[in-house]
Length: 513
Ligand SMILES: Cc1cc2nc3c(=O)[nH]c(=O)nc-3n(C[C@H](O)[C@H](O)[C@H](O)COP(=O)(O)OP(=O)(O)OC[C@H]3O[C@@H](n4cnc5c(N)ncnc54)[C@H](O)[C@@H]3O)c2cc1C
Image 1 (cartoon, helix red, strand yellow):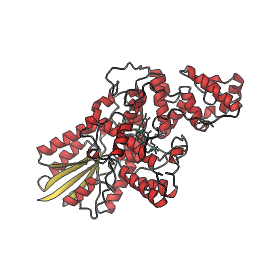
Image 2 (spheres, protein in one colour; image 1 turned 30 degrees about the vertical axis):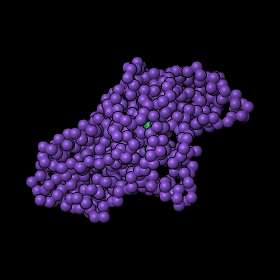
Image 3 (cartoon, protein in one colour; image 1 turned 180 degrees about the vertical axis):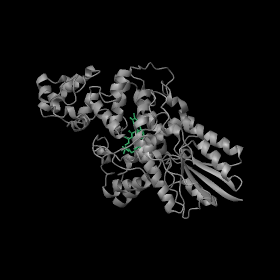
Image 4 (cartoon, protein in one colour; image 1 turned 90 degrees about the vertical axis):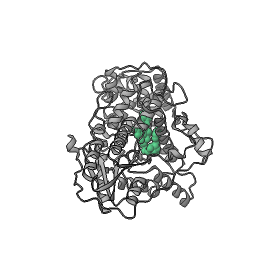
């Protein structure tokens, strides 16, 4: 009997560095590639607040990614079957269709979190019931879990630095890249031509990129690789990453790799290989160090999710004691819609709602504001992020949320961002706030981040009417006004020196690899 391999594409939507693809084409006579637009991941509602799980920005990016993958497969003499259905239903049909003609194997990359692993369990069961082989792979992280110096996920450390130092000490390296198959095996006869859904099929029309978006890129492996090449080789941006990564504006500061990494159209190992090559060829030792450092954070949150399972979604996060969160829907709505009256928060939230993107600095601040200043349930914020983020990744999103909310694996207790200090440190010119809160554009720098402190004649000159065309703040933390006073004094004295705020993801390591 001839062998048929079915490649189930999940968050590994690429040809490069794809072990599953290499296995399928090396070990079968025919290969079917399939992807499911699983309604449970797209149109179903989030477990809190009832937001659609995948709103228009990420959906657009996903559709572009699938179109690109299909084109690449077609150019290799194959193609991609897509379904607007669950993998469980699709595999049932495919097994029925082919089981008398072929010896079938299903291959997939493993995921980490519960909803995804539940589907894997169902597919394994279906395969067992039908005498179908299953082959599983791991692709999402820079480091393979089997190479870590821990013999089981429960032994994984809770502190990032311990993880990083252990890798360095034991000289653990990412695995080499897997080559794209030389020759693609044909699709089996009778493969049904399927159509990739359009945004309109989900009720969205005219989803355009906002003119101020810092993420103007399209989805798909081709644009991922082009962007990677441009960032590292053409624009030499890796060299300046450490200085620019916290910028709130511009598309050439932090790498913007995350949306492609999240759906697997870009391999983290590929990034690492290119950075190392760049360092060697350009004699720029350590140029890629800090980007790889951040990719380690990504791995850290994946392995943390593997360790803690469903606890990542609990109100108390990874802690043992229950946490008394507030559920003030009016305040949450103000946060969500960028109408808190705190310009730095509002600008970030409006950028987010209009583009699907927010900088890491912005994410840390708005998450801290929601959970530490308003004491609102972190899960409300996390599900809003899940719905809107173009780069949503369950482990990075929920892992970072519990971290910032103080119920994750932050070794420092009670870390709390001062919104106004952060605003002055990272948007000292007010450019970012003026972009997203144009009603404040004419305020002078002294008051751009604290309009409630501006004298009435200044508000009048700037055409700002608090409570009318811009909200009064829903909260004022006492330290903010002092911070603002310091800022005005320093502006008057022309002595403003940029001091960085809390930068907790960016502690200098003791030793470099
Ligand atoms: C509340 C909150 C929610 C977040 N949700 C997500 C999410 O759903 N998906 C996501 O990819 N990132 C998430 N992050 C992490 C981080 O904000 C983004 O990865 C980063 O902003 C993406 O921009 P970049 O690609 O330009 O990052 P760069 O600064 O260029 O970093 C390079 C890569 O390193 C990884 N990385 C950087 N910082 C982190 C971090 N703190 N945690 C995990 N990985 C990191 C990303 O893959 C990123 O692409 C979240 C952070 C916070 C505070």
